[in-house]
Length: 359
Image (cartoon, rainbow, N blue to C red; front, top):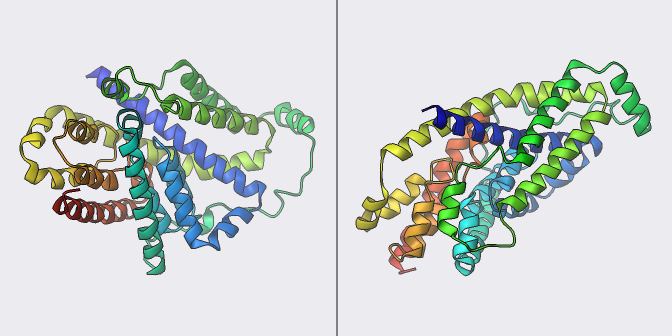
């Protein structure tokens, strides 16, 4: 029991830190550009959707987390959020790229097209989901923030002459996370499943490659903590990102992962799925609602063994998005349910049509 909660806690901490670093980058980029990139992107709704769909295609949850962070901050539209969640399949992408690369690229291409079309259609129809809080409080650029023109060494000297508690806390916390990433402490819950599915095969771009990118991002963010002023740390990073987002993301993620873990280990569905194909499509869509990487591997295995058609794998892939919607669940229950219901309907529709056509 202790081992179970230790694994859940470790994964929760990893996901929370991952999301927070991405949010910090968004906040920092907005201040450095004085909000110009968000205003520019806001002028091109279709570009938002295409950009989000591409991010969703990135294996793992990197792109999905980024789009959730941007939608939470009001940078991209609800259609863009939908497009990203449709094109994203989470960590299962790594397994598919290794085990069935040609089919995987075909699947990703189909998901991208569906996400692009649906996202643009939703935005054209004016469908929106109200954000959980006043978005005027997000990505605020204060008038005096870009007027200072200090040398890096001067800023470093002033910041550590009498360092604030917030600066020390942020540097210590991020430093511990970087250490954990570097030493492999944040081992992914699904690693053993991935290894079992992939055997001795290797792929040039794997999960470790993306973890390295994220590690570099975290290190760059750490450098920022040394040079930015106290105002930026207090108003933008601590009060906005840490206090508003971290508690909810951590608690909701921990609760969801704990519940999912016990459900997965108390109900064995693999054999039932293999012998009841009339219900497999519906089950694929329903399991797609689980905001977790792991349960969906069963459909990849069934497809590779020839027990289910491509259409059912497609239905599951449209509906599921790995861990990407966990922070969305924490930030906006309405947004989470809206994305899951719409994508579930799309998955069921695409899977049914494909199944009838023998695809």
